[in-house]
Image (cartoon, rainbow, N blue to C red; front, side, top):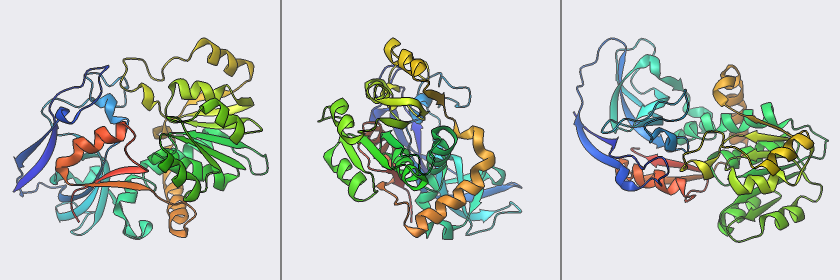
Length: 347
């Protein structure tokens, strides 16, 4: 059986910007003869995510992330359909997902590495298992609830950076649902700002490419900032933290502005920002969703209910074709997506 796959063609360098030529599309031959415990799956959707930038280096910088190897098939979040099975708990037609799905049009995988999911949870939108009702949604919901300390009736203001991305767009909606009276998003275009306010119910949005972030935040957050969902790091985060109230909470989710730089994760803060955190007793703890997987099933069910009821709206940017995986990844790293970046491989 002939399949298509995407391999790592070259590394961008620890301080380099990923480019399409770092990825290579290949033809490969797949044996349809399954061993006990194996399943043949057809890939429907694949995910590209910021953390993958770390895997492009020889050393990912994180003990829980293995680096991608040159000329080997890449992997990440994926969802697909079982076409044949020699696994006792999976049958032909089952929809399955995995965090280590190969970037291939079809693949033979161990059934034990796959999670069977119910398409009814997402109204048939299988890509949602890679976003709002998957690891992305879990990161947003559990990040807000474990590190944000949002309390109904407490008149809290939340700011989200990278707010029009996969995680930020969900996190802001969770903050609103959980009781924040103001949710302000920071993003990189007027189009994204309009989507956040008009479609997702954010109170206001700031275009960091065009506006004075500090001045606009003061307008949008007259009572200061209590909760900051940080997806980007760098100068934007310094600006937000400077306007935080005493006893506030920074949810340290991602630092995408720093991922093309050879710095430790999380990157060190400026002396002034570090001093402010200490003086105002602001918590800033790294959030890793993998540490909270005991709460995953309940959270995913709640997320599916929010999505089906329309209380959470899902944004996606969909690119068609496995040959466009590299383009989709590079675009996502530059903010070209609104919501979750998905690559559709098959129907």
